[in-house]
Structures are given as C-alpha cells and as structure tokens.
Image (cartoon, rainbow, N blue to C red):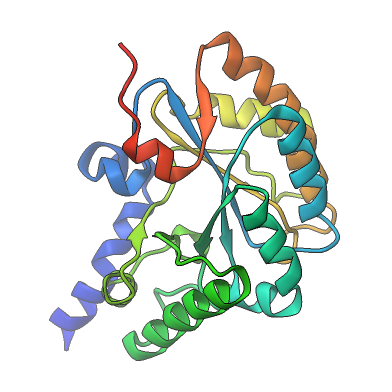
Length: 232
C-alpha cells in the first residue's frame, strides 16, 4: 500500500523546476536551441482567447494551446478557430483538478475525455498533454501514455494568474526563466485564476516579442520546438 502510494506520488517531484530541467529535459520543455515554445493553458475562453489570437496574429507567432475539456465543451467553435488559425491544440485534461489527489482510474478517464473533446471540436489529434497545476502522478503518466500524449511542462512562466500581475511583471517573470530552447507558460483564460488576470498575459506579449527578438530567439509551437534543427 505504502509502495503504491509512493509510486503514485513520486512524479510530483518534477514540479521542482531545476530538478525537471536537469533530469527530465524533454518533460521540462527543453527543445531546439534558438527556439522558444510559447504555450497557453486553461482555454478556450470567449472573453479572452480572441484577444490572444489577435495579438499572436499581429506578431506572426503560432503557439500551443493546452485546452480544458470543460472549456472546449462550452466554446467548441472557438477551439476550432484556434486550430484554424494555425495554432497547435493540446490537452490539459477535462477538468482543472490536481491529478496527484485523484485515483488512477479517475485520472485516466479525465485525460481520455479531455483528449476526445478537444479532437471532436477541432478535428485535430493532440500530441501533447500538460496536467493541471503541472502536478504529475503515476496515474497521470500512465493515462498520457495510453492516450498517446507526450507530457510537457515548462521552463519559464509569467505568474500571470495572480491578482497583482501586470504586463510588466509577467514579462519580467518570463525573462527570468530558461528561454533559449525552453518553453513558456502563460494562460489565455482566467477560469482558474484571478478575474481579469488574462489581460496581464496578453499585454505582455508585445513586450516579450521585443525582448526575444533582441536575443535572436524564434517563437513557435511545441511540435516545432521538438523537431527543428538547433541553431549553431
């Protein structure tokens, strides 16, 4: 019993960013040097996702959107619009609940339902999965394998869910992370965050574009991130 519980909880240690970056680089989101994978969690959300799509279009960027099945069910047309705009769709589960405190069969059902809802709305089979809160469990890893999904977390985040977040603070927090060959986490919805916090994330994108351009870093999807030839 104790051994089974330990095996279930052990993957949660990957929530420690330096540990996962050094021991599990692909899980952390380390890909091609010279490239940054831009990812968004928790959408699609009719009140905020369209603003992200507009800004990304203006920047000429494509990103990976980790969608919640519950949110896709409410706005399937918007999920399809994200995919039609050339962005990559990925799975964030059906519901935004930590998988560490759920049974393996509950987690398996959640991941499979999330995958099927996203595919049904967008017509695209997802390649990637990210657990809510970035909290992995043994059950979550098994569920992702069974659904043929590659688990990817992040190497930089904007802490954009906080009520005190601003476009400036989000930009500064992202720039403190590992960027060259790394993966950035932002949120295109405030459904699990402080109300209105998405505006800080979308407001940070032009600022990030300037900073990343100065570092000669390309921005794109996770699929590009793991398949591009590194620069240099």
